[in-house]
Length: 115
Length: 113
Image 1 (tube, rainbow over the protein chains, first blue to last red):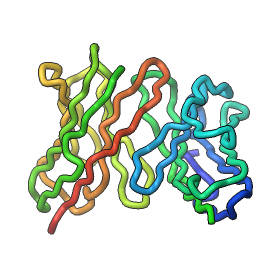
Image 2 (cartoon, helix red, strand yellow):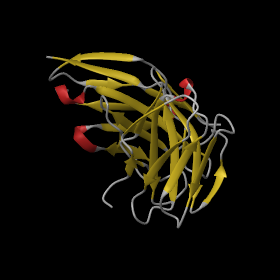
Image 3 (cartoon, one colour):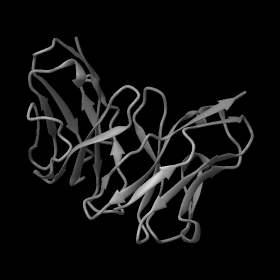
């Protein structure tokens, strides 16, 4: 597509439930990144993909968080047993390649609220 | 490791006056540097990037930045602020070979009428 698409745009869930957040990157973009932005915080790196592989998962805050990417395209970020501290805007970005010279294109994000 | 310092957490200018958002980097070699903008309740947008091809980089919306190795700076400027420029601005280095970007706290630009 023309841009990075994320769905849903807003999600309210009860504490303890699992949620799945979806990211459709720009067609042909091989690199995909997930970030989290909490109220009053900067952007926190979560994970990135080269194709379907995730060489760097160092930002995932706990084992309740996981992500996968299939077909070198769509990625889903899953949060199990959600907690209130998981409330944040989850941003996905893609880039044409991976390396220091490529800028990202960001999606509009999914605003997750855990009640 | 590369890091940047955005020297001002908040900048306030009047509409029509110049904008200067300061960014200094710390690196043992010339980094790749990006400026991103985030408007309220919107996603992030790439303004411009420096990748060593040219020291003066022009971006979107009339913004530009100059990479000055002697000062280890990459300040963002615009000759005349517009109300629509009010947003959060991030100066971001690219780390290593993965392209992973580490964002700091950013600078909030306020534009007064």
